[in-house]
Each structure stands twice: as C-alpha cells, then as structure tokens.
Length: 263
Image (cartoon, rainbow, N blue to C red; front, top):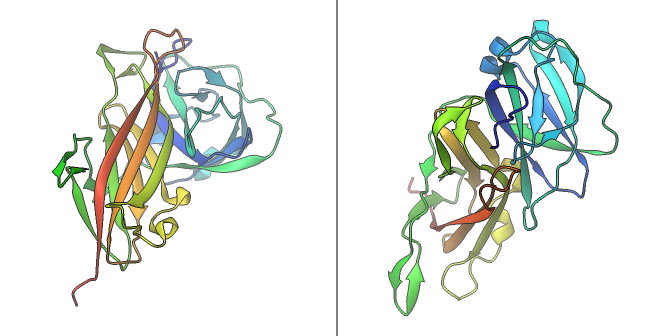
C-alpha cells in the first residue's frame, strides 16, 4: 500500500513539482508547517520520502534548524508517470519508535523546486468529478465556475482514492496521486479562449494530502477574457508497488466562465 510498510509513520505531506527530466526535488520546510515541526523528531531522522506507490526515495537534509523550524530536503526523482506535467512525492514522519540512524544521504544532480501546503483552511470552489450533461449535439461539464477576469479564483478538485476498510501504517489510502496534468481548452469549438496559457500556471498547483481530510488538487484560475473555457484536470493515480491495484487516471472537467466584475 502507499503508506510505507517498512516502518510505521503517522503523518505525511505531499510535495508537487514541475517535471524537468530526472532532476531531484528541492522542498523547503518552513515554520508554517506547524503540525510537522510539532511532531517530527528534532533531528529529522524519522523522515521518509516515498513515491505514490510507497517506494522509498533517497533524500538529503540540505538544511535543518529545529529551533527555528526551518529546513529543506533534496529528494531523488521517482519514475514520473507519462503525461504528468506535475508530479507528486510524499514526505512521511512520526515513526512509532524513535529512529536512531540518520537516513540522509547525498543526492546528486540539479533540482526543481517542490511545493508543500500547510494544513490551512482555504475558501476554494470545489469541483467534483461528475458525468457530463447533454448540451446541443454533444455534452458539457456538469459544473460551471464563475471566475472574474480580475484576480484569481481558487479551484479545489477532491481526489476519491481507493481506501482500505481499516487504516494501516498511518492512513487508509490504497493509492495516491502520482502526477497531475492541468489544461484550459476551448469550450465549444469556436477557438476560445485566445490565450489559454494565461488562465493558469504550473507554479500555482498544489496537492494536499491529509489522513483525515483526504487528498485534493488545488489550482488558481486567472482568466483574462470574458469567455467560456473548458478546464480539464487529469490525476494519475498509482496503487501499491505490489500491483494489488492497477494504475488509473481520473479526469475532472468544469466550465470556467470568465466574467467582467461588477463594480
């Protein structure tokens, strides 16, 4: 199962990064990660980094100052699922017994900046995966999001992962998000929007993984035209390394309606 079985851990966070070959991932652990610093070993020896299948990845603590709650990790790039624009690894901690050996090793190569999300309350528009509805001669997404062309609209896409009947090794998840692909497309065949690249950015995508609240993909939508566009979010899910559950792709669609704000 995705939760590491070699040694029980109680907590985890997800780190997403923009894929660039096999470059390692550099992750900052800032004071905002209050729950992390309150429960991790003071020396960081209980850290365990894994891919979406629960396979351990070598990591290096490139900096660590427990007194000021600051640190950073360099994590070996896992095998990235084909199609992923962004990939996801998981950082576990909170071992059932004190870890005495330092797992940090030198990780070579260039790095890409990874992003982690603190356990915060976010007022996001939730977009569930729903079947499309009939529209004219075809279908359209069942969800429409109104997005003013001034500022940004935060979109949350909850991931319905396969789970075990009983939580084991810290969490119930039997699969995890390995990669994400976000696209803004024409909604109705007339070529709109004219500048879809302006409507979102890889740098704004986050993946939050919480043992109780579940896993969610978060992204900012920033339309610059008062037109309709199609948002497509693909999540590449992987089951345990044992192969007990096949890999699958979950695709969520929504109509993003760019509107002029009313003053």
